[in-house]
Image 1 (tube, rainbow, N blue to C red):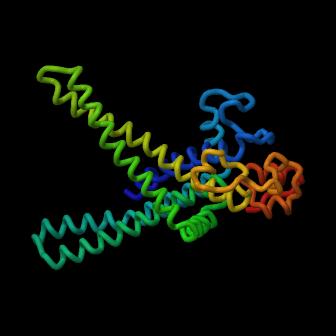
Image 2 (tube, helix red, strand yellow):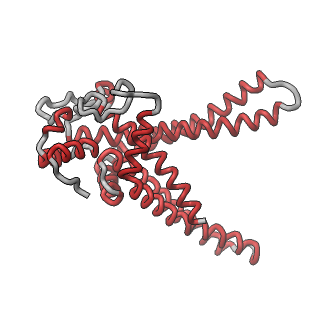
Image 3 (cartoon, helix red, strand yellow):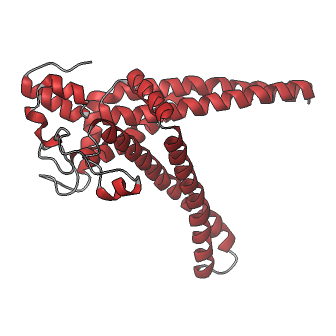
Length: 288
């Protein structure tokens, strides 16, 4: 059971990391000339290149981080599953005991809250790892700092992604069922409607999952950009939406990263690919 949980959360971690890598690459590299950009309009672009390059980057640098994070989530999920099993066994053997039932429910609630907190911090850690290249523990620490520094923005981001997910997962399947009722008639409509409802929900949930990670990654990228680069990489529409001023002309140019001294590159905290570019140009080994 633990192995299955670990594998499931690991594949979800890869899903999150791939999207975060693609979004952060677009955010920081879409206008520079370092050759790091992999999206539409880049040299040698082909359909699926951003995803493929993100997978290659993850396979080379981030598999340990994703395995460690998914292991922690699986480790936090196991006690709740064990408690569920114990609860079922107690009900089958001793019947309903109000005191025991209330105690188990309290433990279930506490374990569920702890599990959700770990999942949230871990997701931010995956995204922070994609943006900065930090290993899991340092990325998780940076995620704690982000939440503590911007609690309202984090709460708003969580609220928006949650509302998007709920509305989409309710409205889209219902709309598909209504459309199917107009197309399909006869006795077989109910069976078809159930199939359409389930299939539409699965597809919608996967799609909204992509949007959730995208919004969270944009939030992390924007906060990092405004902290370290005066918002130089932010699109004008995003800057206006957040009510932020235009970037300072004296902020470090990201396109000149290859010629930037290593000490200066570390001081301004570049993205992982840019830091590697700077270190390679200076023939200096990367920091672990």
